[in-house]
Amino acid sequence: MRHAHTVEQVRAAEAALAPAPLMERAVAGLAAACARLLTRRRGRVYGSALLVLAGSGDSGGGALFAGARLAGRGAAVSAVLLDPGRAHPAALAALRAAGGRVTTDQEVGLADFSRADLILDGIVGIGGRGGLGPAAAVYATAPRAGLLVAVDLPSGVDADTGEVPGAALRADVTVTFGTYKPGLVVDPGAGHVGALHLVPIGLRPPQAPVEALQHADLAALLPRPATESDKYRRGVVGLLAGSERYPGAALLAVAGALRGGAGAVRYQGRPAEEVVRCHPEVLLTAGRVQAWVVGPGSGDDTPEALDDALASEVPVLVDADGLSELARRGPGALAGRAAPTLLTPHAGEAARLLGGTVTADQVAAARLRHARELAARFGATVLLKGSSTVVARPDGAVRVNPTGTSWLATAGSGDVLAGLAGALLAAGLTPWDAAPAAAYLHGLAGRLAAGEPGAPVTASDVAAALPAAWRDVAEGGRPGGAAGLGD
Ligand SMILES: NC(=O)C1=CN([C@@H]2O[C@H](COP(=O)(O)OP(=O)(O)OC[C@H]3O[C@@H](n4cnc5c(N)ncnc54)[C@H](OP(=O)(O)O)[C@@H]3O)[C@@H](O)[C@H]2O)[C@@H](O)CC1
Ligand SMILES: Nc1ncnc2c1ncn2[C@@H]1O[C@H](COP(=O)(O)OP(=O)(O)O)[C@@H](O)[C@H]1O
Ligand SMILES: [K+]
Image (cartoon, rainbow, N blue to C red):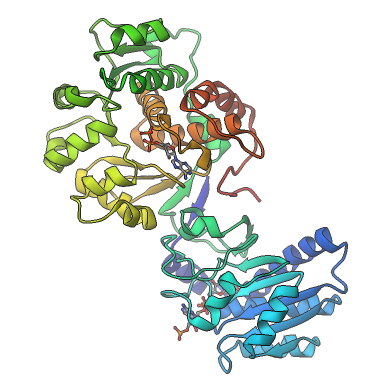
């Protein structure tokens, strides 16, 4: 599991330790990471050109100290002070003593920026507030040939939320200290991070409010049939999906459920004939189920389907048309339920569920905030889809999905996800485990189907790649995934 802590938690954990060794460990880790990158790029540190962008805080201080170390190894180091007069005094002295050149002239800074082999972004770290000022913002779009290494987090990204209120630097590598920060793993901030490298500095933060499952977590969660299993014990998914207008949604949700390990799928919906033709495994008879999935393409049948599902005593996943109906009914519709409910909106559906007071773009720009608000309002677990899918619990705990690819943005891939998550609920996982596990497998399947460097995939391709994703997890596979969480 990767844990991400808030600024307040990091500050409190830092306050419990002596400041000098913290800075020393952070700088050693940062300089070592830069030396490795320079050696990979140019064969050696000696003779390479390094630029430090230094703000007024400790992020600038760490960057200047690291610059001093690399100057000591023969790099030609220059530093631009973005807040002259407030740069970290000891770090600035160290850089000067090591032969580093210091400027406050923006033209000189931009020229060095374009030529440097490696740029250290020490403009702001976790102390950054609001958008970058104009002197710093020019570096967000200025041309460069070298690698950009963000110190702790890319300047302009909000550490707690991943929101990017204005200009922000886009890093090739982010070297973060002590623990991950939510802004490094949640889009749009996560999209600025590049490869993410954690330098341990001895922090002991409390429980993390945001976490990201890794391969090993998934392997421990995924249900495997035991020798005495039968199809009922593995879990039967009831599917209220598809309509004459949208038969495909039913087919794809069934595919997701079957490849998600359901012992059986009971289908209730109009295009039953097509469903059985395509998936002869499906049961059309009424009977007990361990979880309901309601909504993908369910059209006019949705109100009744939602009534039936919500009246049941098993977990219910509400998706697509089910969510539109739920938005009309409001949070009171879930009030009487004893069994858990999982909502799986994309940003547009989330905006509707939030009462239409925000737009889909606003939801996507502040994913943590809106997923938490929705979970609290409906008293349900919420899986907010899109780039960096997040799962929020009503108490505010969040799991961010580190797998996935934008090739998944294709019609019907959400239907596959709904069936898959439904199968995991039917197998007995709680929504808090089933939702991130489904997002993880779905994202991995998307990546496997798209391949490297990537090609268009269909929702059916994603469903077909689920067994490979499942095996990849079981085998231990690659840690990290698309969010670059692996070092
Ligand atoms: N603790 C340790 O041992 C180590 C800590 N390290 C690093 O320190 C960081 C935390 O340090 P920090 O608290 O000094 O905050 P940091 O983010 O560097 O700067 C805050 C300053 O920036 C300014 N500022 C604010 N917003 C701004 C904006 N939009 N645009 C421009 N400027 C803005 C703000 O100015 P003010 O608002 O006060 O006028 C304030 O002066 C942490 O993230 C990590 O990177 C490591 O490098 C080494 C080991
Ligand atoms: N930019 C993106 N990056 C990663 N995943 C994405 C992106 N856009 C969409 N997805 C994923 O693709 C799926 C789309 O689901 P959804 O929006 O319900 O589409 P549909 O209704 O057509 O099935 C979700 O799993 C979502 O997380
Ligand atoms: K930074």
